[in-house]
Image (cartoon, rainbow, N blue to C red):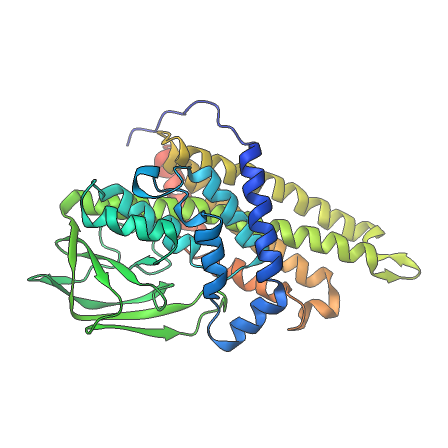
Length: 377
């Protein structure tokens, strides 16, 4: 395999527009998705707030960031979408952003033409009127695009079962990778059943989807279908790194704040050398994770030739940082960190669930080894 050539120096800084977008999204989540509200909805078994999604997707326009203006979107890039993903991680907000506005949208963009069904669906997604989910297991890596979620197709219908699909139960449209290509399936029809599963992360529901002769609209065939699914999974893995960065940033900031306020022996516990060393090490990891996540988002935005390598590097690193930050957050909060009333457990569960999403860190390290022509360990 020929190693990809490095692209121009990536821009890892946030632009003024990106910071403005961050402020709008953060204000929305502070108002509509604080930790008490997130936990209450998660416990109810229906974590998604339709009004929150309406405000995020349609009001702010986050759902259409990747969609060109001619198709009804904002005409932005993966850099702006990564900012939204980062804020979702920072607040563990339950929203189908990654699965619908990133993965499914990227798949549709890869097969869309001006008058086709994919273009019409993209307009609905961009406005936030509908959501879509790619019918693959949440654990599927970009390398699995050729066979992830494949079901049988026959005379305009599809049949089969795919387990562990994120956000499928609430999606309006399912993008189905069948043996003969890629299809769009209306989720609310006879022949489609989404059985909710019990997820580790209560803020992101999973389902087992069963198709039994469901009517399907063809979108692409052959290599075009495989490439579209691969692009969607690659974008999902790349922007998942930004979500993991947001998780890690909140955990570090909250831990520093708490250890400044918590006193023992008439001193803030954060002044104890052992704890300072742990938080300093975590800060270094978060800074490195930010660079990796921003590099992946920039590579996707510029269609860099080494985008696949940038995404694999980001996922192989950010995954572990998010888990470590969440674990340290729980431990350094002491007794309260182990309680249900403190939001630390939401971040630990999101970090652990994300660590196997769109490919484990080990799978992405194998990709790095292949793309960079490094010998496998």
